[in-house]
Image (cartoon, rainbow, N blue to C red; front, side, top):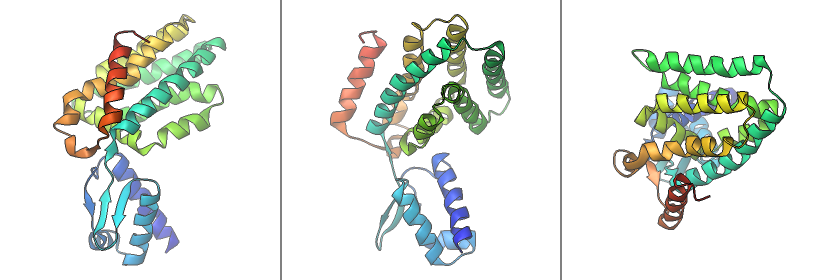
Length: 241
């Protein structure tokens, strides 16, 4: 029974983060029981676990609903990631990366290009490669736990997937990756901040009106915080920080 619950939990968690199950969507116990051929107790256990990590909101007698994406939380994670990853890449440059390290990074870029040039783009594989590239320097600098923490943020991970699926800005993402690799090859630490700042905030720029229109129902808004971060990013784009 415990094994069944774990498998169901992992399946639903993966489907929610990948947006196969969308923010705001209601999950019915009876539907899940039928789908996984189990009784209600294991489903309730799974729902509780998903609620504990912030992916579900369970209300007694009303059912379970997939949590909305907090736009404020996304802004804050991008801010945190920009600060942390900037220093991580700078430290990586200080190690004088080997030709093999550079080749591994360039190989990821080549694979990403093949994906977006295909007739049907595999968003999940592009997403995986994007994560693999950024994880590379975290691993090299013995900071894999920090990268795991970034990836465990359920608001940010769903936003990243929505960016890939909704905007299909693959070419620009890869161009940014190429700029980062070029700076690393040239041991150019000073360019990392502007390149990475633009790269990590570009998802918000690409999503733009989509957040307020096409995907409005996916997001939870905190007007005061959102206004602050919108202004912050505007100043960042102008080079005021």
